[in-house]
Figure 1: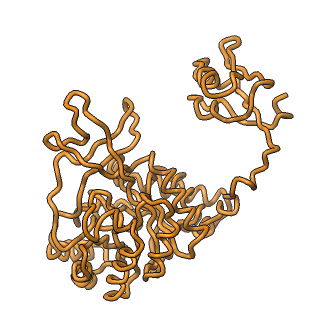
Figure 2: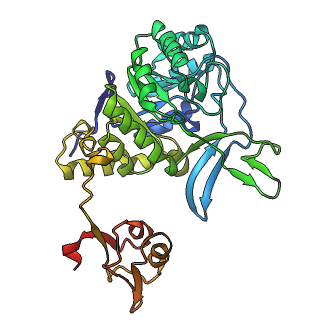
Figure 3: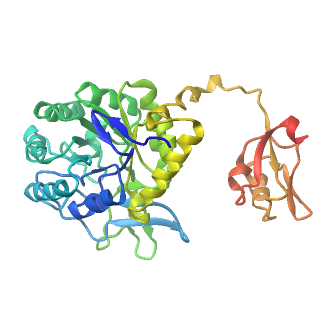
Length: 395
């Protein structure tokens, strides 16, 4: 059985799954529930010098029927004081003396704001600090997403924190930048030991068309918030892979992870740990059981003995466009035993493909003379009945 224990920035994690800074880690009670369930570590809900008052409502789930597409939050940082967090940390350490705790911190535009938080928390059992330079709900001073978008300010803040602690610093970056690799280099060179990629994407959940107010609406008023959930995965996965290819720095993957397969993908492009929040809020702390079991079984099937064996394994296959072999032409193949005759693939191909699908005996069939191998129908098919094959296999 594969060993899920993971060493990262000098810290031993029993498995690579951490609960991200979020409502799931808002106090000791929640974090202890996570640890009892089996999570490998937890990142405190962002701690600052002063607690904040959160708006109500502040979470909006984007759904299509029962299918949840994502979530936008306008949540701010912790509502606990520093003194209260000291008591919370003591409570966690009484029951879990060794489980890794990462303190996510945020400050203002001067070193004292950041350094006083470090001084207050460090003696009470935190293993590392995650420097939050990426919260999209803050946009003033030296805090929030704008901080993570400005290399000069970012370097300054990381330097302030580095001055007062020898604990590992994880720098949590925003995806709301043109080139995240440049920001990652700045964070590393300023004293960061690792990068967490990424925080939420700035988004607007929607508009209530009856009241013409943004969602979530607080007395008819709304703000841009942080978009998380499955839709964020493609963006954050790209960020992790981009950093891994160009910057020599340990990585934590975060964004849109809900299944063990998602975690394995992040690890295969360079992450050593992964963080989850939205999936925990939707599915509960017990989801860790499926995550660890699935990842362990996968590692076994691949012949890997540890998580580190998978780290970065997919990166050599991630290339640039000129390196693609354009001579390869696959064709769609419909398995008649799986086709349910819904016709969705035909509609898609008629509108966005090459009109290469038609119905015959209540089953979809491919016209191989028209099929261009785009792959649209594969993703459209609700029964996973279409695959891409070599022309010689289809004809």
